[in-house]
Image (cartoon, rainbow, N blue to C red; front, side, top):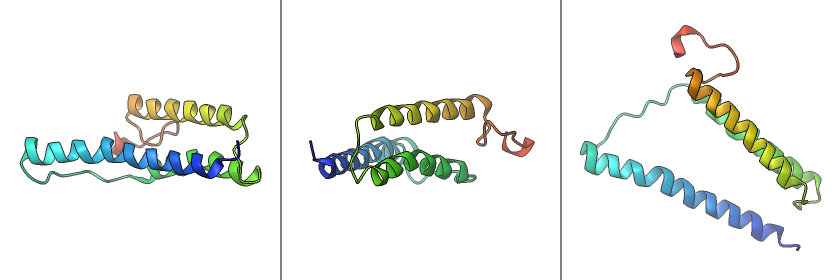
Length: 110
């Protein structure tokens, strides 16, 4: 319909709102009501998570740039496939307790 910029803005706005609700509200509840102050957050080994974000963003950017800055109808199937692959990797990481799944992990990360 020629409203690609509105769709992208809507998606970005919705994601910002989801991140706020999914992260800020539970942290506030835990900090103020459950713990009564600051609590430790382990932030070691963030590289796999950052790579997953970058890899799942690549199809969106590539389709948008290669399709004359529009989102063709077939891109929805590609994005759904990308999401399914992400879910498989996320489940594999959780089940195996290995952040580098499907690659072997050393004994130190288990």
